[in-house]
Figure 1 (tube, rainbow, N blue to C red):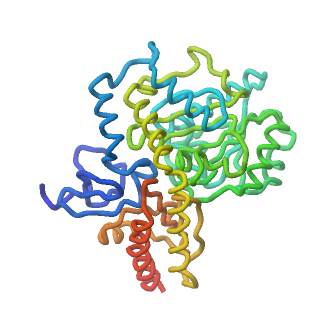
Figure 2: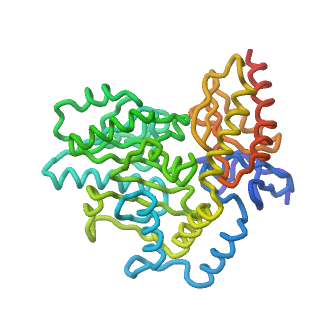
Figure 3: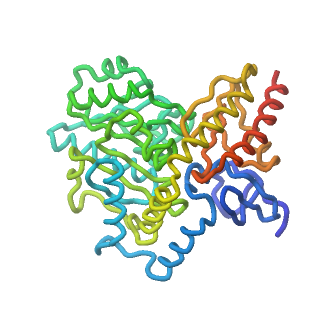
Length: 400
């Protein structure tokens, strides 16, 4: 194939600021482009490729499923839906699951759940608390819940019914909701992904859980990006020892196959009844097999412990390599979800990293995001640091 990849295509909508490479195949934590250049993957399709690429157990399982049945509609029972739902219930301590295809859909379903929860209690105009810098998707409802004015521009009027508060400030949350009988839920990411890898503090999470219990609100925790073992626990909020009422999942649940889920606890599990919600592709046999196998392999190979161990090592390498460097603002995150914030926009580093054989992203303009496959080894983490640190030093030196 030609070495030249056009920056834009005449036939696809110009919705992505793409880098000028096209990937052809992968193995483990490495991918190759159509010209044969190899890259170390520290992005995992944006926290999607949990098991890396061409996993020796996942691929045959998916091939087996494709040879049996890929899709059947939800008029019929899908046995792996029940298997995957039972596993997610066991891992979360919650009770029931709805399957869909994307994180946006899961978050949209969570918003619908919260609104119907309110209506069922006689609240005519339910309101949901959301957060500054949040990202929940790009549909009109999830865009309205998102805290990014840049991506909201041009799509108004946005949906009403959201109250926005700052993160990690329980008094601000109490003040914003004081005396408001229409509040039905608090909706947040345990670690904001697109917003810049911003973690909620553990004490804050426990305070919000207590407040939701006191006020009879739903605690809805978006684990789309930070869930499925990425932080070293199945779901990032479990570090705080709490449980959600509603938990949207997606990304890493199927190791690359489109899949999402809304897991609900007793307070929300039976709000939806037949006809209230649905999806064509959600819960299809291929996606369910991908979810079942992904969880099985995570457990079998100890990938939660691996994410914690390798993530801590990578973060230590970065902290040591950038200690005292002017231009570094903060290093945040947990496990294999790490954000390195500089004090200036640094989007140029994505191309520089590609040139050096490393896949990363920059989010919130100035935060280098690392979300590699959970199979990453200590040696590969060292390789990430060995490539990335000089790039950051050079970039900051040029801006000085």
